[in-house]
Image (cartoon, rainbow over the protein chains, first blue to last red):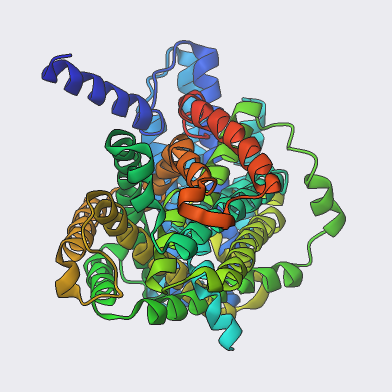
Length: 149
Length: 407
C-alpha cells in the first residue's frame, strides 16, 4: 500500500472513530427532525436538572464549586442550542417545532446564566425560587422530549 | 499502619483502573442511566484484573523482571512491537486525560480555569517522577486517594431506596437500547482491566525489589487494592443512581459527578472528595507516564526505573519527560479530557488480548517461573477471560460506532 493511500485510510479510520460524537447529521424529513428536537430537549432537561440539583444543595457547596457546575450547565445548554440550530428544518411544521424547543432551551440557558451571574457576585439570591423555576423548565423540556421520542 | 503502607502499590494501581478521570465520569454516567444494572461488569473486571495482576506481580517477584521485558523475549520483537505500539498509544491518550483531570480537580477547588493549571500539574508530576522515591510517591497519592471513600458515606447519607438499588442489579432500564448497554459494559471492563495497570504493577514490584519471599505482599496488594477500587467505582455509580437517575440528569463532567457528596455530606466532604479526585487523577498521571517509560525502556532493553539514579536511567527519564510534554500539549489544545479518556477506554478494551495473552503464557512458563507457575484454577479462569477479552476486543469499536459513543 502506498504511503498517501495509507495516510488516507488512517485519516478515514480516525474520522470514523471520533466523528460520531462530534457532529450533527442533517434531518431527512419531519419525523427525523422531530426526533432530533426530542433529543435536544432531553439533553437540555438533563443540563437544567444538574444545575437545579446543584442549586438545591448550594449550602453544601463552595462558591467556586457552584460557579464551575453552573458554568458547565450553561455551556452544555449553549452547545445544545448551537448544535440544534445547525440542523435545517425540512418544512414549516418543523420550523414551528424548532421555535417551540428553542424557546424552552434558550429560556433555560438564560435562567442558568442569570444564576451564574449571581454566584459570580455572591451567592444565589433565592435558591428555593431558582429550584422551582428550573424544575418547571426541566419538566416542560422532559414533556417535550417524551412527546417526540 | 505498616500493613496499610505495604498495599499502597495495589491501591495506586487500582486507581488507574477504577477511579481515574475516565472511570470517575463513566461510573457516574452509568449509574445515572443504567442504575446498578452494570455492577456485574465491575465484578467481572475486579476478578479479571486480580487474576492477571496477580500473575504479573508473581512474574516480577519470581523472575525480578517486569512483564514487558519478558513479552519481547517470549513472543519475539515483532509481536512485542505490536503490543508496545498499542499500549503506548493508549498510555499517551490516558496521560493527557489524567493531567486534564487533575487540573479539573484544582479548578473545582479554586474556580480558576483548568487550562491554567495544566502546565503546573505536568511540571509537578514530572518533578515527582524525577525526584521522589517510588515508595514515597505511591504512599502519598495512594493514601490521599482514599478520600474517595466519602462516596460510600455519602451514599448512606443520601438515604437511597435500598430495595430499588437491589432491584436495579438485575434489571437494565427499558428505555436504553441493548447496544448502548453493552457499549458501556465494554467501556467499564476496558477501564477496569486497562493494560497499563499490569505494566505498572509488575514494574512497581521490581522497583520495590520483590522476590519470591514477597508473594504474600504481592497478593495482599492485588486482593486489597483492586477490590477497593472496584468498590469505590460501584459507590460512585450508586450515588449517581440515587441522586441523578430519578430526575433523568446525566452528569458528564467531574464537577457534576461529585455533586452527590456535596448533597449528602456538605462542604467539608466536598473538599475531601475533591482532594481524593485530585490524588486519584494525579496518581494515574504518574502511573501512565511511568508506564510509558517502563514499556518503551523494557522493550528496547534500556536501564529503567526509579530505583536507580536518574543519570543511570537517562533514556527512561527522557521518555517520561517527552510523553508528559506531548500529553500536556494535547490537553492544552482544549480537547475535552473526559472525551479523550472515554475513547481511550474503548481502545483499551480493543487491545486487552494483546496485553493479557503474553501474561498468561509467561505465568505458565517454568523456564521463567520455576515451581511458581499458574495452578489449574488460574489457568482455567485465565482461558475463560481470554475468550471474553477476545469478544470484547472484536465488539469494542463497532459498538462505539453503532451507538455514536454511547449517546
